[in-house]
Length: 343
Ligand code: AMP
Ligand code: MG
Image (cartoon, rainbow, N blue to C red; front, side, top):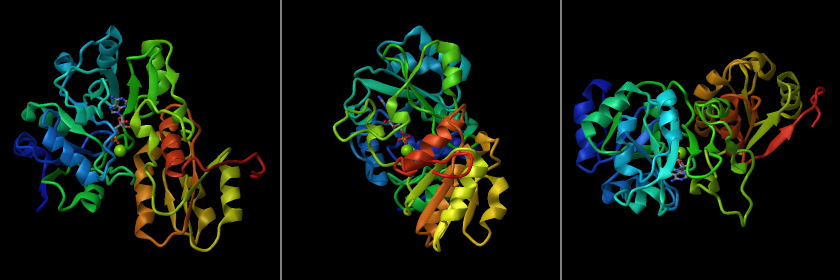
């Protein structure tokens, strides 16, 4: 199959791919999505095949505005509209009870569905022209770091899908925040561009799912099937360093061996001269780190790097999403150092 590249101005033509049951990767403000008509079961099945995604991992339905919610959701609490007013279009997915017309293949058989209205103008134009809810996970091969540029999508999907809309680099860089509104109190399932602190401002009490902070145990039943799988992982094993940045950097410097690579805050690049180094932004700028983190992880797959050391921000604000992605890429292999840089 020849994968056609669309420009953002070609939203109407690109939407025809979706209406005809094809697969189209498209830019959002978070990461690139791999879209199909969410009411067309055969088209949605092709997403799983193209990504090599486990069947029990549900997809998110993308809609152009909150007015479309009642078409797909059986019950919409006031909290959903309050969140939509403040954060949509934007990097927030709400888990709501589904209507029967949403196919099982989208929800992995759950009686809930993830709903999102993305903030990227090209994505919104596409959704309006498509006239159908667009089921989309991230447009990477399952398990790999998510794509934040069209070139990343091409790496994974060239020849496997009908089209890619190239909308440039993603502004947020990590996937949407997912909040489950079918439980009380509402529960954060995945941290993202909308922070836990912001959710609490609108909703009051919000619980963070334990899977946000640690690996699920063998016998544990995850609330969202996506929490169960190894994620965002480059080929080389990753070790994450927590603690004061200077101390973490010293620890990495002391343990660096031939063949290692480093993901670090910009200030520490000179410390690692001679080693493959991917800076992800200043230590005090977690929003920039969010934009850079997946590109940094992906970079090492094109190299012979044997081990990756990664500096990690504190889990506050969008730093929670960055640290969650790094921890998952590391399989939660995290070392915490003290002020002296000792583990
Ligand atoms: P991705 O496929 O990388 O875009 O991520 C989609 C995420 O949304 C996965 O982690 C899913 O587990 C989660 N998700 C989608 N639908 C639901 C749902 N109904 N309940 C819980 N999580 C969901
Ligand atoms: Mg994904």
